[in-house]
Image (cartoon, rainbow, N blue to C red; front, side):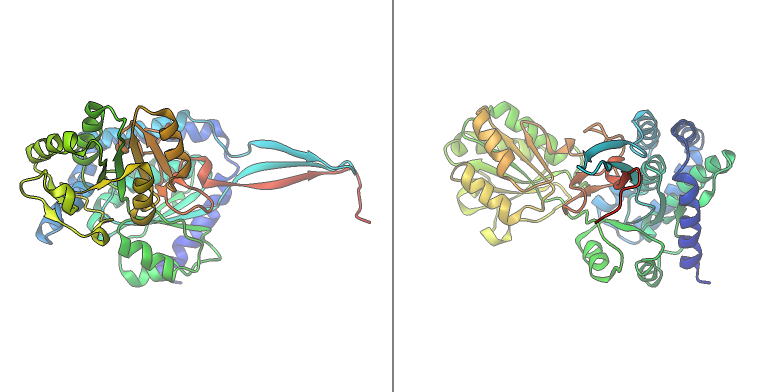
Length: 415
């Protein structure tokens, strides 16, 4: 039997045990996992150093290395995220009344786990802890196939979590990392439709397309983050500047970083010179439309069709637009259904923008960096879905479950 077949069948068997585990036990396990991550911090950091050394030797980009890097703060964030998950209500088993039929049948729906979730990701070792905890709380076994860049770190994190599972007499197969990152094994993994219920890829455009094109299992896409900030003519320009700087420079190598700035033409002459000063101070490379470029000393002029890039770096695209309609048209053409932001003091404009823009998260006067499961109250997130079946936006516990019908009768037969 192949390694992939062994892993997937083990996950199926383990998922049956977890599906009926009491919430109180789940929470005890999760709190123990958080504690273990803190206690085994040095073990994890040592493993991460090996990945970072290899990444540097292989010439990985600065944004990829940022995603790969673990430190005290990020391990604490993983542990704290798991504690938050432990404190959230367990969706599994929750019931709701649907209807009572004229013939007396009582119809309810109950939340149930998806079963076995497969995560395919690149250089993000924290996904191992986040996905492991979220899937565990929501009753799912998880198989994690990370890129070779993060393999040693992911295996170390998984071992810490698996040791906790075994202390509670639970199968370690509930959280599994594929130990070989070869593409052949990944392809085989995507064919296991009798044992894996859903695949969630997280990474670059190439990875998402490869999984979508080759998987025989339903795929929830977590596509690139081409996030825009639109500065309306009625914006508070100080707030606008704060949103821009935070969205673009707080962390560049993440999918909720701001990649495009749209500025209403009526305020461009006032606002863009200030933007030029601030972005130069922050060493941000500017790509701009021809009319916007006049406000920058060293901008690269780009054509309209060249917008829509995910830079994941200190780089941004800037365009002047003629009002909210042109801003929304730009987003409709170049956005990636991830996160879009408007800065305005006009409530009607804000509400129109939120209703009209097709993105999983649409914000008013808030940084795109808040498009994150933990910041939106979900605990950790398994990713940000940019497709609409069955989840859209940051995926927390409820998104990792589905509903089945419960029908109660007292002998009814269909005529």
